Image: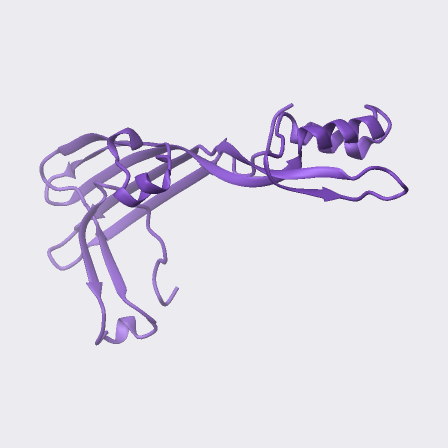
Length: 219
């Protein structure tokens, strides 16, 4: 596109230079609406070079603020492991070079949500009115609710026809949401003459949310 590539994966060892332009763009950046970020990918050289790393971010190493502790806020559980490697060098000295880097980011965290479900009494009332097998919609709903029961902010829901109201309440539910992110960058540079140079770059990024839409409970 005229504005250039809008997204580049965050590879720790993949870049040689990052420049941020905030105003007074030259003609080549004329369509930029905000800051322009130029990223120059790393290339090979006449010497072989490489690296490997493993970065761990664990909520066990984090702490709550004084305000969080006063409010009784619990520490969110987050475990992130980012590891990768890079390697580059010459194919033909002073002429042809290669470079490649791979990174994997594993995030293991959870999300807390407030849901409104029948209380213990409401669940029993529903089951007495609709025994298992009588109404497939009620059976499906109660299977989704599983072992969750409303605990607070109670209210009654009328279902009509002279039948008793169903008591509902709020409760909290936690669900794991693991994320796997694989990133790859390769580059080949060819300098046939002192005045000419050619570069080829391939960027790959695949992010997977293994539990993006979790169910609220288990039966």
